[in-house]
Length: 275
Image 1 (cartoon, rainbow, N blue to C red):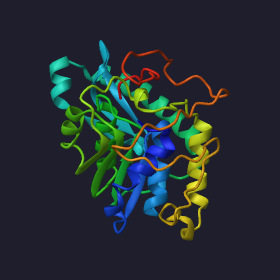
Image 2 (cartoon, helix red, strand yellow; image 1 turned 180 degrees about the horizontal axis):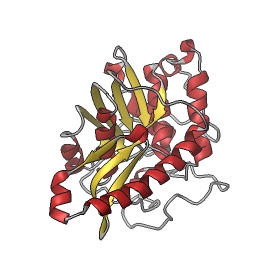
Image 3 (cartoon, helix red, strand yellow; image 1 turned 120 degrees about the vertical axis):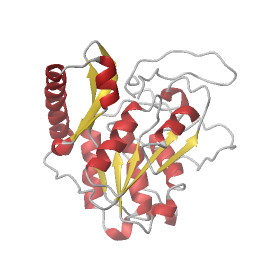
């Protein structure tokens, strides 16, 4: 298990070091993925941005995506799903219009006037705090390519093996620290899976922009930058002993509720919606 997203990001960064000599842009999937991505950007000395995507769902079955949209008018359509689900042109237009407005509002909230970083000809490293079904991650990969990324790397602390295998068709490289057959929900893999707000995402982007170049490899000097509310956690690797409980009494309720799950030595965390 991971203590929290910051610790997961530091551990994930060790698997990304081969990208340090490339022209990289690290892209976090809001909201929780941005906290993990911040640590990757710090370790790689790379700029940090968000990648905002919205799935275009079939009207009578919204969980089935017939495409996805991103900023700057990027639109990716899956003709096979459109044909199989018999989605009309009018239906597609209505769904896209609605999702485009949601995307616009989200962009305004998290960017707060900050310009988007160009991906043209660069390596896009897309980071999330965990992958369940992979539908959002797949859309993000497709949007990054549509925005001109020359290479797409998808990275997450935890992802089931079947989802990782499917995503290799959309990303040039898929990196996951843990690949459990029985995922059970992303929140179960974190001691602290607190909710992340838009204000925190905006703050992390601001901090990434304002960091001097000399501080960008702080993690290599053994003095990783602390986020508000973080407490120092010993570096953990697969095979290490359990991480001490990190929950604080003043933390907000986890993002998707909480519950108990039976099993030796495991305390359940929030059920996470598929991503």
